[in-house]
Length: 286
Image 1 (cartoon, rainbow, N blue to C red):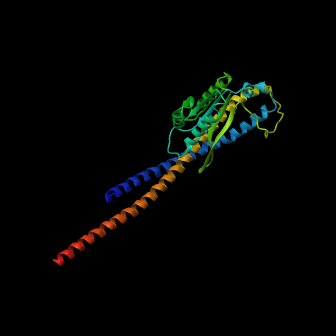
Image 2: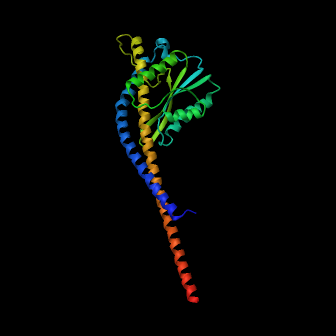
Image 3: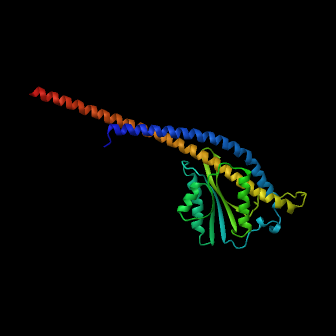
């Protein structure tokens, strides 16, 4: 049975933890606001870029660009999984890792190779422990900028064009709100146009082929940038929510332990009083 001193020490420890979680929540909230501002800047551009690319390449022959060609036999698949380097954000990283792991387990007989191109230490470590084939991992990315995006886009395009992989999937966390984020797992390369995209017969100058050659790499870079920014925003939201829950749980534990402490102290006082009364009665009897 824990003594009063042990309970008091535990209450003090939980209060210290609560202070830390409350501070982390406030820091994550500030980072979330900045990340949302960055997301708003790129969101409309990314949506319009996807619409424009879909309209331009719609009804074009697949051989107009190598990244439009769907290979007849898909033997090697690459998954681009976007996570984070830090934890304490609930199931944010675990969900990304699970999607890559489940896809690998469900399709290991279907494909010769399933590789994962990882962003984030937590997802990398998760997949490494489960013996998943990691092609490359990006760790400690301090800033998402055009230089990073261009390097990643060129590398992914090279992996596809060189025949190292026949299809590329993109997996990241979509930010719906501060309390709701969901994992997106979608085909990335080769580029496919949605049937819902309306075909517009643009008057192109220079010709449509040259425009597509310039547009598609830019579209891929934009898609990667958007996925990274949205994932970063979702990470801050998930951490803020996780720290809020931890702060609330700490408060509940302190309340419970305070009741236990008061009950134990009252029991101790009652026992001491009974010992005193018993001793007094014994002396009176003699």
